[in-house]
Image (cartoon, helix red, strand yellow):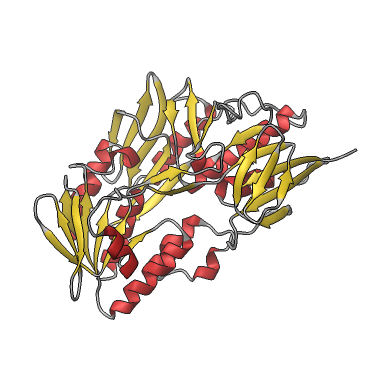
Length: 389
């Protein structure tokens, strides 16, 4: 009897979690396909590489006992169930899990000076291991406390600003919103983080970048109010966008069972998507997307369980609900979240040393976030797992 071939596109959090859930099941052969020339690594650790506290080699991600192909996927032919790779190789599949992740949200290509700054090596993103190594090398090359302008003030940007400021670098934090970070933290937590930023770094909230130009000893960032910021490095941290091979291109739409749908994938059994590439459409939260490591891993494992159920190899995992936790250290405070925090706050729980807010969608608690309140936030996470509020 021929083994069922499950192919997983992507070797990050979602892809490796899916593979771990599938490996060991009799009659299922699992193949992971990663990017050409790339050794799988943990995105959770790349910030430490950029700050200098983690060596690049320590980010390597152990793979489960599955076949691994490092050959970027170009096209998925859903009708013939074949994956075409950059090398020209074709891999046939019986079931497919798309876990190709995301890319940094791109700048306006018309932003004056951005292309020149990128070519000069002073414009960065912090999304991949290569990005982190480049930032680390650029900071070290300064030979002194660096002048660093960061565009964006969400989770990655805030943690980056905090860590680099603690190392003695001069940080300018620029955000388009007057109160940045609401989507990542919720309004109340975001307000407290913004207040901490104002005490420790130069903040330019409610501002956009008008142009970038190269000067003799600096990259000059000009804001829409005319302010000029001299920088050695400019880091763009404006979030991510999903990425997927053709026929999807920009993310894969999924239902609450993580089954892919769309013009060419609709009706084809056993095509699922998970992690940063998945754009969710369900009756629980509407249209939504989460792009952090722990939730990606949870989605990958759930997709694998859904696949096993469709093959009669396991129990029905039910609809996917975001319940994973995330945590960051920002200006000496532990900022924690669980579930889905991009929803209005219903309740605020404030103690002497703890600050927690609960997020609701309709009449249902879907997430919690807090400052210096990891235990309380994680208790709400346990309630989400138990299906109670």
